[in-house]
Image (cartoon, rainbow, N blue to C red; front, side, top):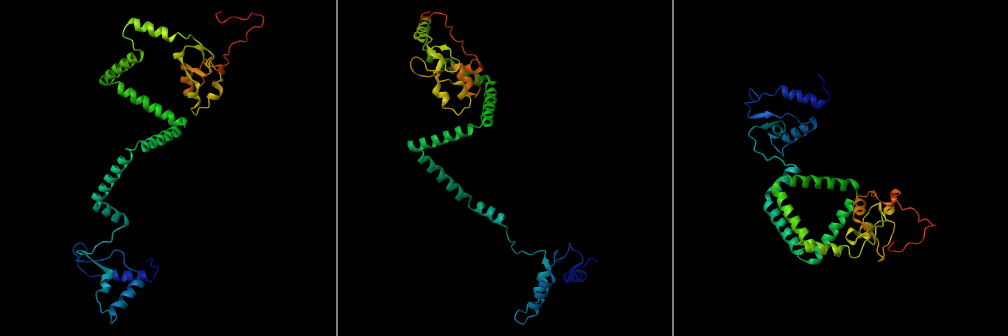
Length: 274
């Protein structure tokens, strides 16, 4: 019969002699699905028959459960936590409001706000040193811009603002202004040397190479050649800068073996005008 211990024998005997009610659905008192072991039953019998206790219902409480029992069920830790949060929801909301107001007051201080911005910028730079993270950000940004620009209502204000920005930048309202802008741009001549491709550029076509050097890029070691222009500053052209910022070697860079040939020794020395 699969009997393993004295508790199994007692359980079989109890279930065979259970006579409360005619069916389990109509019983006011039902036998528990899981009965106590023999040692606990024996202890309950001794306590029920003890002269000090004289509780004849003690054994029945161990074996039977009432269908209309209103005893409070013991809560689990998760239930206690959930009830506590529901009870103190208003208190939590009040604490969150106080915390938000405290942070707002604290950020009114310019120094505190500057420290937070500096820390946040450093954290983003550190995170964007990872090539995969930077690629994911660029892909998401490109997709977001494409989604926005499919809407004509979004594209129209963007074009208007872009046109206004260009007009303000060039400050040109007539052909005379355009001519004046051109003469100003080419006044110094193409005397600025790109440290990456070694080409001569105008002032508006180059930027300081120190900006690219400050970025954590491995390609700068081979692309930037420390070439200094006549004013003592190292420059890089806008085209080479665009590729270098992507950690790629520019197509026209000297690093691609595109350097100029050595000046033949049998030719005379040329002047600056020549």
